[in-house]
Image (cartoon, rainbow, N blue to C red; front, side, top):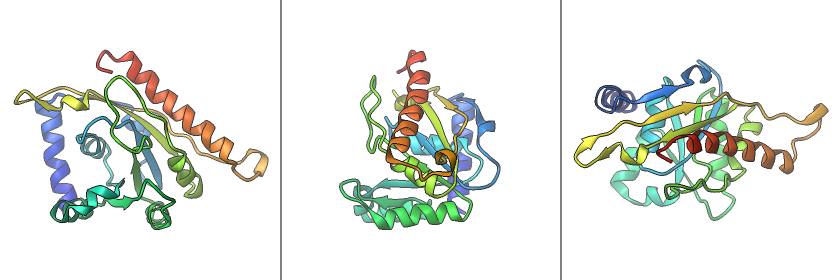
Length: 202
């Protein structure tokens, strides 16, 4: 209920005040498990990503965000759950796979943190591994100019580009290797980087 209400308001703001541009929305499946990954430069990124996808996204978020009691309660009610980036977090992995097993959408920022403008950080392999284990397509999304969604007292234009997803499977029925996960992660990163590089706002 809270998620739907919040996203409805954000979509109105983004469409009529920001005049956002969205490309590739048809690449999000109408049903079934999905792992969506995107670049991360702003606190608006999760909101923009959630607003552009017609289904609810359950976000994996940095555990530090959940140490602020009131804020933690809000983001939990919106479907977010914590992950400890400094160790192998089995609880977060189980939570992520439960989301995919339900046929829902998982959102991950594979850089692990917000990265300053003009660069794109290394993509960790966790998102690719989860997508492979959950038999879900890994869909890259480029978020452009989200750093300026609200600046100077005004809402500003931004753009979201959703690329075609990829299923991660072993070759000739073999087990998926860490090398394959790394290759997929690098390919997804390159797709996002190419979109960002073509944009004057990157």
